[in-house]
Length: 328
Image (cartoon, rainbow, N blue to C red; front, side):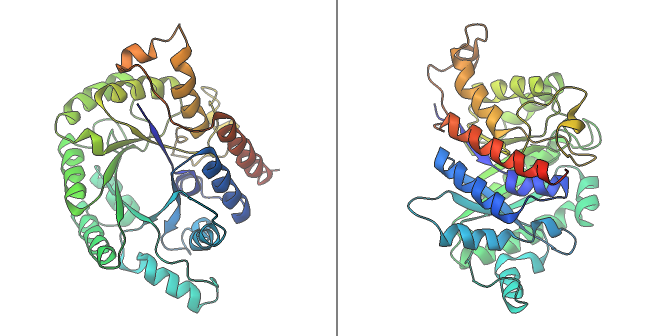
């Protein structure tokens, strides 16, 4: 059984923590991940760069990655904010006209979009209702299909709670997921935006959700302060057939409980993403641990991410060293 780690660090880490390493360091990290076998990377976002300046190198990154590509490269995804001016083609033209971009990189391989199961979060992030967010996503996807884009990915954020574990109705999680799939998203990631997916609550919500969704098209996007929680959750959904998990190479391998904010800069209200390095270790190494009946619980004989373990670790060490220099 193959488990896919969808790399979101270049976008979500920078988005969450409101800071960015040098563009060259992000570029080099993505190249290292490709060398390790990573097949999917969310490289940045097409958003208001005055508000989110740390995402402003997204299309420069795309241009460099495509211009310097030798052989097979990862699928490059870009998150698109739910406003008309964020459409990538329009954003690229504006950057070219202003001289902030010297070469047209073309459209990304994949566009990703987000809507929240919590109406409060939709208003907080976008000043829009969920219905308005969805209508804008629909317009983006319709236009992109006409432009030849083949891959679309959806996020339902705060799927397990926003300010608490009960303010994101299950009906909203299921409804928005189905509607994104109907729009043409090949996959929808359910996001635990605030780390509310603690095992007891997660199992209750997951049990209510799973029978209503095509699990082969579902991914999980965890933000965790305590990886013991993440381990329990991932084993649960693997056993049910989920095979894709969003992870970040930029996040710490294993935060120290109670000292998460001291190990790496984090946004005030966003726990770290699940670490690519640790997720790869957990999935590929724990299968051989006789004290952890991983395979028996998941219900399979073989499991792998098909990534080079040492090369993933090298990429993690490289980018975290670059991040550390920002705060010396």
